[in-house]
Image (cartoon, rainbow, N blue to C red; front, side, top):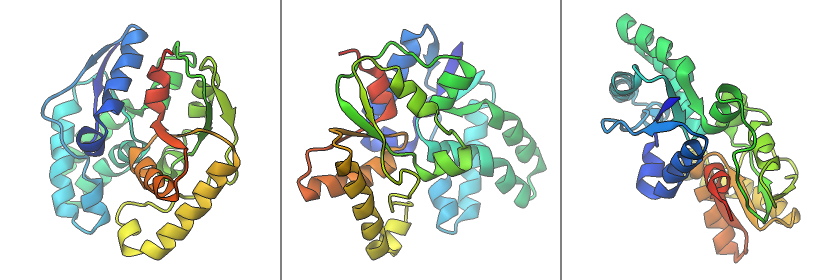
Length: 242
């Protein structure tokens, strides 16, 4: 299959290794990955902070870049949810019926990484090896908007050498929430403290998630705390062979 990678602006700017890991995993499985050069932001941060008009321009750009793709992989539940749940709605609300129709047609071909692997490609064993104790945090958008369920866990259970530890109260938010962490910093910090306390209770050396924005939030708190827990995106663990 020929798969287009929407790397997301956060990954492209701060976590380029995640995009490379996605390519490694998919190419190992025999698929061709392309990177459309005209891609930019999904528009989520603009919509969430009250700028729907600006978000609409990103809907138009995304649709134009990816609408001919056989499949689009997104290493972010948050951004995948924005594309699937909001792009067509946003276009329709602005009276752009043409764009809404195109965005709606594209949406079913846009997949978060674990969805693509398990549901579209039909694999759970991607040939990975990672001999560490790992716990998994299901990020809010992936859990509540995409409904990816146990797909990431099914993938992690097939990784050779990996010891998967159950995270207590896993479904609780980490407190990031984009600008929520800035506008409600005390509440955000308290939520984050609860989450990392649960992470440390697992005895895991690695905290895994499918969104680097949440991992950035949690990783910063873990580092400040002097914890030895490392944060890694799901794609990076699945790309590992040692």
